[in-house]
Length: 469
Ligand code: AMP
Image 1 (tube, rainbow, N blue to C red):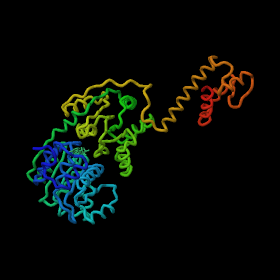
Image 2 (image 1 turned 135 degrees about the vertical axis):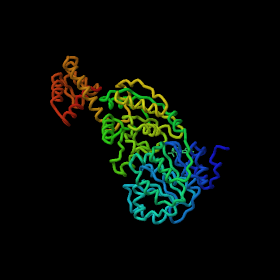
Image 3 (image 1 turned 90 degrees about the horizontal axis):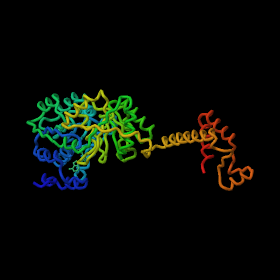
Image 4 (image 1 turned 90 degrees about the vertical axis):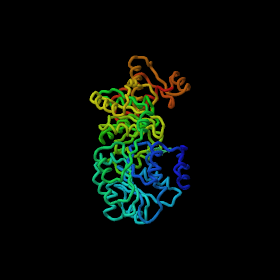
């Protein structure tokens, strides 16, 4: 069997789209699923993020359906970000077919959604709450749905959407095909599958551990009260081009992102309390490499696909073991290697052992980077640069005043050129190259010490200027 998409005998429109987006070799989950989906088999697929699961269901669905007034496929996702991402993937697979695809999700303008739903959408991707809303309003007509996809089903359960998912499943025609994707198989998901799927075939994809295997993992032992300092050192010394820092709570995301910004990193927060518009903007900026460090909660970061993310840092170890895999799976996507670091406090050690057991591998303890005072500055923001200059300035003033008071600066100091110097030596006062006596300098330094704010700054500039050649 050749290892290309040709083996699935897809339509020329879909093949053309796949060639255009650069999918040449199917990933394991695609190899295992596409033919079955085309043959009408219900599937339970245990595959995780980064395995290529979107195309595993998206490609055969796009290939099989033809357009009509009512939706033919419904894909449920746990988060808005994933809904948007899946929808955009579906659109790219369907580029040369006459099909329409749209995403529906909370905080999105419902009137806009209603407008395109009533015009006719073939493939709808959405979060459970918003899909249910449309079903109740009768703006989403379920009777012609042939494919129901539950993407990241375990996550929908974790997020408390399972009742809404059930309510949706019950409204979809029974002679549909159901495809369930889930990294884990908790009891409730097994029950759902057992009650609502027809003789489902289970596919387990090992690429999960392979993905994990491709990622260099390590942890740093840190004290609880030095986590931020250590994070700063790690990013500074490892210099990732792009990095996601995971925290367990929104509050911590804000605090860590603020801290990193103060330390001069181009960092931004991402969590569920931010508006949808802000979240999308942040994600797009991150994808476009407009800033380097994204500080995020698990939920907010789901569905973000950044192809060249080279580092993930667990500022907090995740409470739930699977989240560790989801997080580090953000790096090393589609076969690329990546790096994942975790900060581990003494309280976290048990969790770390559990994670190691769960992934079936040992995570290596790494020596903490040196404090790295002399390391080149990294990812500066203007604000920080300014602050840095001020600090430098203050240091210079300390040095200058030390020199002045220790008598190392004698009589006069000249700011200016040789011409000014000679004029001064001949006793003349100059305007450009002004001469200062030792007493005057002592006075300026004393003034500087007694001033605050802008006045202090301008004196500081003056003092620094005095001593610059
Ligand atoms: P997914 O697991 O669907 O989120 O896909 C993970 C990443 O792999 C995405 O960036 C996809 O664009 C990429 N991908 C999926 N299938 C393939 C393929 N057959 N060849 C190359 N890249 C792929």
